[in-house]
Structure formats: structure tokens, C-alpha cells
Length: 330
Image (cartoon, rainbow, N blue to C red; front, top):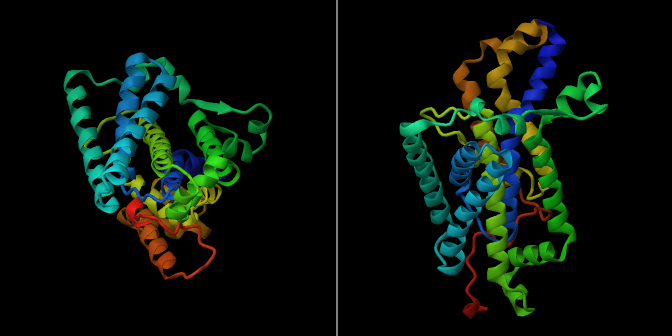
């Protein structure tokens, strides 16, 4: 097989298989910029994946799948908001509980539907067509680069657009600036009349809805095959680390997604790259498969260690992140 084709396929797959990380990261950035720390990304993505996939197949509508995935994720965000904003529950514990809850719902609903009749993706034309690659006229014909960047499925383009829109929202809109103010100093924001509860609910639910879309992407990317493992496969946890890596910026999250995606895709394409470039990359074939599988999580741990040791005034971390706001103590 042509070595250039293998390289282009590898670079193409970095985007295809890892864009769900972008959805999870951007969604969590929205949540954290409002001052809330939601560790339930994995569970939220799983719920969005399951309900979005089933609804989309039953309605034979890709659009319905997207809407239901977003709403399902947003409802998970609503649960988190009620518990942490209204009832002032511990955010860390609530997020971890939400992950356990979401994974439980995934398997409970999935196994229940499978026992009756599991929807096979190939049987639903609208779902297949909606997730098919879209070639951008002219740009997709550019040698090499065209297939890598301009011949992707609709959810790749949508994920990039969402990342850009969230960046604009947080940086250049009144609502976004108020959201950031709440994340930095909720007491000061409250003193000038900003409704803390309303803004937190808004950002938590919309951010969680975006996570749900990322879960649906993973389900579709796996052809809706329900196995013994959850579709999200730990991507939610990597997304939490990517938020820190991206310094709470949706634009930098684009770069972070591709960097993490590079290592993640090696476990699929490492052997092919070693065969195509034996002189330069032949050593990849000698790396155990188990190390490839663990590599994304090892990189995640390294990022968390390095960023925790880094002392920088330019960090984008909200000052009130993870802290419940008690108005009476203002």
C-alpha cells in the first residue's frame, strides 16, 4: 500500500476518531467558566450517546438524533445544576455520581432495547447519510490536505463551529462576559445585579448538551454496535484534562484535541505506519498494544501533573471554580 496514502489516512483518522474530545472539552469549558466543576462529562456523554442514537434511529432522522442527544445531555446538566447550584451539594462528589449514573443508564437502557430489537445503524438511511463524509467543493481536491481537512463528516465541521462560537460567546458577548464574571467572583457579580443562578443553569445545561452531542458522535463512529464497553471509552475523563491543557480556551481546545488525538490514533495505525516507514517509524511495531491503549490516559496524567506544578498568572482557570456560592455570606 502506498506510504503517502497510509500517512494521509492516519492524519485523517486523528480528526475522525477524536473530535468527540472537542465536544466534551468545549462543553466542560462552558460549565467551568461559570464557576462550576462538573466531573460527570463521561456519564453525560454516555447518556447523550444512547438516547440520541436510539431516537435518531427510531425516527430515521439524523436531526432528531442530534436534538435528542443535546437535550439528554442538557438534562444531565440540569440534574447537576439542581444539586450543586440550588441545593449546594459538593460539586466533585456530584460530578462523580453523575458519571456513575450516566454509565448505569447507558447499559440499562441499551441492554433493555437490545433485548427487544437493537437498531442497526445501516438500516436507517438518514442516520448513515447524516454521518457520511461531506466533501467541500474545490478544497477537498487539494492533494493530501483535502482529504485530511475538507472531506469529513458533518459532526466534525459542527464541532469546530461550536468551538469557535463558544469562544466568541465567552469573549465577545454580554452574556459570556457575565458568565466569566460569575466564575471569577460571584459575589461581585451578584452585587451588580447579575442573576447567578440563571447564568449557572444556562451554561451548565448548554455545556452539558454539547457533551451529549460528542457522545452521539462516538456511537455513530462505532456504527451503533453495542458491546460490553461503553461508547465513550474514557473520553470524558480525557476531556476534563484537556480543559486544563487548553487553558480554558475553546480555540486552544482545537489544538489540544489533535495533540491528544495523535497519541490516541497510534493504537490503531501504529503498525501500519511502521510498515510504511520502516526506517523512520519501524520501532512503532515493537511497542506493546497495551501501551498504545494506555497512552492517552498516561498523557492525561502527565498534563495534570505538569499544569498543577505550573504557577502562572495567565491561567484561564476561573478563580471561583468548584466553589459553591452562598449569597448570605457575601
